[in-house]
Length: 597
Image (cartoon, rainbow, N blue to C red; front, top):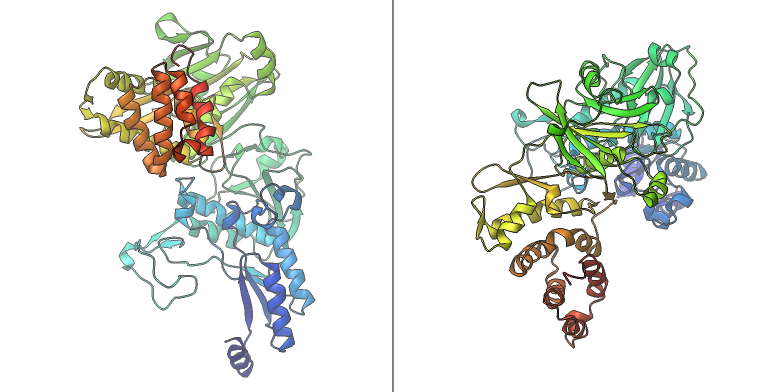
């Protein structure tokens, strides 16, 4: 095929591009170019489809080259890949390099993040900016432009064609009336208007998790600024006040922002100045330490707060709403809880206060008030309690797991008492908690709020499976922390509170981690209910064999027959010899009090 193409292209005086190796595979690039050179049929343009989807984020080091453990040592990212491939092409006499196709499919994004179309747009903008920053690529393109799975325009046809859209455009499926532009098309347009034709002046910061790249053209100086997923950087920590006030701000999608943003996030923003202006970035520019945000909350913006020794973030629709909120929730104005509004007063004080945005609405405030001596020592190496609650809720929402909506966090910088911090969220007027659900069924009832036992367990399991499948280890999954609402006769909705102990992982939790998380809620269930609940949960994971062994030992220990339980663990049946079961049991039972054992 190459020989035929080469002859036809040469006969017509056209440009031949190839061999379009998929992803970053230097041995194939070297081998194919060597073969074509030996045949005297080298292309005019060296092409490689520089996919970054396998790294998840465009700027990440590729873990599929030397493995996850050595990825940070090898530091092979998109820019390094492009430069290596350009060098390979130059060595064979083909210095021009193009990336004809790269894309992120929405189903793959949705494995961990539900805001798939917004994330697709983020990744496109970041990918294109890094390709431009590499200095090695003469051109780069997206893959299928019109396609339901990964197109910049949705054709409304969920069924994927037999022939990949990236290679086959004999026809475009779907009716024109069903076509819908996705945010990624606007992101591509914004990039195309601002960056091509510019001179790249380099990356302006050295820290990880933050990217600041400068491009200068005859018309303007552009700085593209963004962070990795879930992180944020305060612009006042990156630039001088004078430079910030004189800049024009454009969103990832090219819209001119009416208000000066205070935070950079995973969605790139463009700061624009006149072409002759000299703008520098502050030394040590980096992301906010330990702060996580959920960037894509519809109609909301994160506003950075730093005043009178306090620091925090307020989530509001705009600067006017943030200012209105701060008149009430400013950490110097929150004050002490009133007796009639106090929900809890132990290690933490939790109380409600009026929401200034809406008559009759309430906010919940949480502040640590008591710290044990060992906690005062250990917690000084952790983020404040207020920030941990903010981060936990942000990570839940970012992964599509419902929780009480966050409003703000504040912490006193340099506070050694560890009590001068606040977390605020919207009050959730729910009907029940999971504690009432499990207690009802443990008492022998066949239904809860009109919903049968099996149906209630299935819906709760679906919620927890989503949370665990998206890398959230809650670590305090008691019934009182799971709020329940009944939306209709057959369906329950769930949300979480008290999120300060959450641990976040990059992929689905292991079976061991899942059981460690389920212990507290399972302890309150009766034997039959526990069997039903775990059967439903494990069936979704195809872990029926593990269930048999776990329930057998759990039942014997619950009945106080520890000797029989030990015998069960050593039974002849292969199911009890599973290393997974031996791994699960210590975690699961160590959480049960001696009396319960």
